[in-house]
Image 1 (cartoon, rainbow, N blue to C red):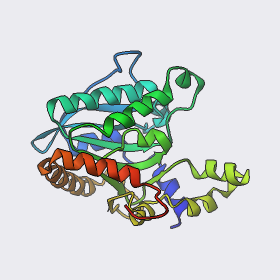
Image 2 (image 1 turned 45 degrees about the horizontal axis):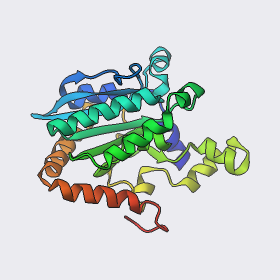
Image 3 (image 1 turned 90 degrees about the horizontal axis):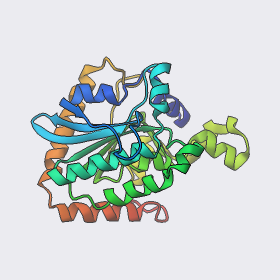
Length: 266
């Protein structure tokens, strides 16, 4: 399986979406809606839940399991309302001392004119700035696509995990090929150059842990996968909560300052 095969697998509509992860990993999920400024955005879901017995804040990108659902959540592409909602939820987590778990699965932030008119870039920037300073542990899991600033806006974290068949990059392979060669059909070739797979990013120091998937990729019915992931998340959150928050903040800052530093590992 080459890099582009993994891109296609990351986009596969039969993969579990965020609501599937929430229902299988957490209990007592209470969803929080709206940005308190404009409206709710179905492409970002967030709220309070229990991870085993620990209260946590969970949020992430939502893709639909059908065409109708995808229209409702804009195919997982948030507008500024989604990022303002995410920021509101994360700041509440800091206020009450809850660790934050974020799940990334988006082709990117919505690039439409109306989103730009309502401050898309500003909303993403505020998320980035705030996450760098939040005084609670943050763990991010890339479960499918991790596209551009739309993914980065909720993944400024102490730890970044990726599913084996997830991808994380500055833009899509098709976009890369179009810009570089004016030929989107060379997306497979572009994927190899971009080094966007979980194993590529683990080697580069961007990803801390690669989560193995069942053969053919994780599906909604793979209960053993979710049981194992819940166990790993519980252990990691427990470890992060025991660390000094000033140390976590320094590590978080240093991590992102070092990204792309002449090929050096972080």
